[in-house]
Length: 172
Picture 1 (cartoon, rainbow, N blue to C red):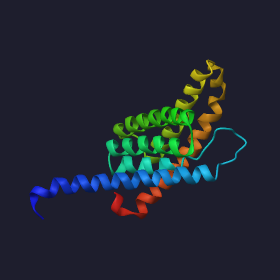
Picture 2: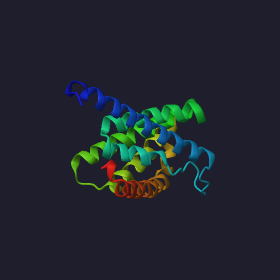
Picture 3: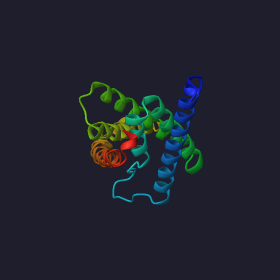
């Protein structure tokens, strides 16, 4: 291979990988929209698309993971939601992503711990937007329920991410 074309090849491969990850996360969002998790607790979702975000964070880097997360939120909101769903998802997704990046940077947490924190902060971001939208911080009484739900779903997402990383060594 000609060394002068190597940077272009890596950029093209990186762009293709980002597009594939974004598409995969969008497919997971669509599947979750088709089969909503109906628990006794309103507003709880597994967040299947976050598997891809966690995988991207650990394999493609935080820039690619951020773009995958942002594009998935915007596209899923436009295709399967509305302006409010985009706003709630952006608040949750961006706060969650920031928390995961900060915790990952410390080196003190496993993928499961980082994913669990992502689930908790996602719920906190969405709850904050909801409280601001209705001008009532009384909604934060619901946070303990969302805290445990975020921990549970975050752990599940983390377990799947770990299993995928173990099964697909090419991602490491």
